[in-house]
Image (cartoon, rainbow over all chains, first blue to last red; front, side, top):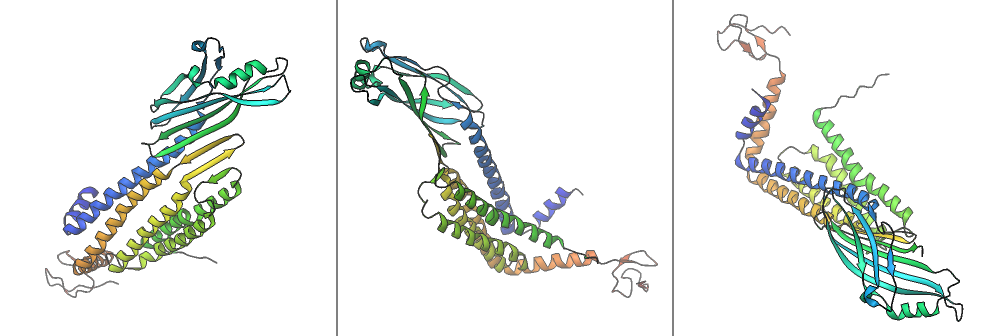
Length: 189
Length: 199
C-alpha cells in the first residue's frame, strides 16, 4: 500500500473535528508559506529596483526663451527598469530646477528656483522598462526668478543648474510605499 | 572517553524547533538592533518611534525569550491535551505581538549625503499579522476541540502508544502452525501448542 493511501486511510478514521483541524492547519500553513515567500521576493526585488531607476537618463533639454513663452520647455529623460515580479504602481515624479549664479550688480551668489513640476508617470509592469521624457512648459516656470536671472546674471561667471527630484511609487499590490529623494544633482550648463 | 548521545525523534524535533525559534526571535532581532544602532541617527531614521527604539527592542527580546521557552517546553505536554492547546495558543498570541513590535521598523528613512530613501513596509507586516491571526483562530478551535473531545483524544493517544509498543516487540513463531505469537503467551491461540521463548 502506498504511503499516501495509508495516510488517507488514517485520516479517514479520524473524528470530524480532528479532520477539520488538520485541513485548517494545512491551509493556513500553505497560505503563510506562500505569503512569506512573496514578501521575501518583494524585499529582494526592491533592492534591485532602486538601482534600476535612472533620472535623468541622458541630457536635460531646457529652453529659457521668456520672450516666446510657448517655446519655453524642460525635457528630462527617465528610465525605470522593473526587473521584479510585481508591478510598480502610481509612479509620481516631482522635479525642481534651481539655478545658481552671481549677480553682476552686487556680486552676490544667488540660488533661485526656476522650475517645479509634479507629474504622474503611471505604471511600470513587472519585467518591463519604461523610457520617457518628463516635460514641463511655461506654466511650470517661476517667471519672476527667471527674469531676475536673465537680467542680472554675470556672464563672465559660472552658472550652475541643480536638479531636486522626488520619486514616489507603490509596489507589491500597493502594500509597499517608497519615496526616493535626491537633492542638488548637478546639471552642467 | 566516548560520549554517546541518543536522541529520540521527538527530542530531535523539539531541539531543532527551539534552535529555529531562538534564531528567528532572539538572534536576528539582536543583530538587527546593533546594525540599526550603528547606522542611526546619521543614515537611518525610524520615523515614528525613533525615541522608543530601545524600549521596543527590550519588549521584542522578552517576547523572544518567552517564545523560545514555550517552544522548548511544548513537547513536555502530551499531544491533544488542554495544556498543550493553551501553550500553542499563547505561542501564537506572542508571535502576533512579536510581529507588531517588529513591524515598527517597517517605516524607514535612510539618508546618505544628498539622497534619501523613505520606505514604508507596514502593509507587508499587516499582511503577515492578518495571516498569523488565522493561526490564533486555529489554535482556539483546537483548544475547544481538545476540551470537548477529551475522552476521545485520551483513548486515541493511548491506542497509538499501545500499537507502537506492540510493533516494537518481537513475535515468536509457533513451532507447529507457524502463527506469530506474542512472547507473553504460553500457548498458541490457533493450535494450542506450547510456545517456548528462546530469549
